[in-house]
Length: 231
Image (cartoon, rainbow, N blue to C red):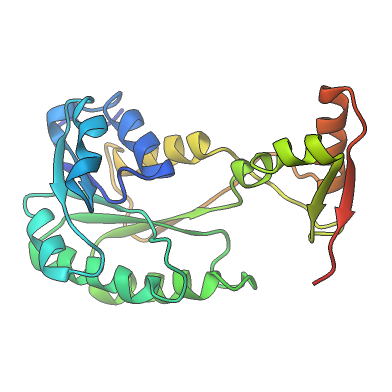
């Protein structure tokens, strides 16, 4: 069951993940209880079609976030996209949430953030530390790889008969953005909030890129090779 009385806010609501979260959330709770945060007014129309309130705020402008977060019980902080600046931007959002009296913050982090060796994990570790230090009731929604990161390269692979990658025999346990959106909403809107909870979210089965490309080839009925590019 979802909490029908709380006031929810989703940041990055016009983005690829955020738009799915908003659509999923309004299927669980009254649309009038949902606030979508965007940076630009021209992004509001598609979200307002869901019957939600749209507020304007920018990760680089803490004052705008503090104003946007007023009256919010539960906040989903979707990670920003600017590599190298995200930790500072997220800190603005966390500080604004504290100042606005937000009751609970869920953050879309990265799978196994403490030990993850990929470059983008550093921003997530720093953000998780800032959230813990804030004293806000919180949960970390640690997302694995998005399947769309792989499928976006299918059209050129079919055109040229080759799918380029650098993963070698590495394993992926990816899931779609819709899968992650459903998981995020299940935590955000739960009847009972478990502060400090960490959710490691990923696909049920693992695959190599060679296996992924073999499926593409079979479905297309034409040969497609997996070509490993060495940096």
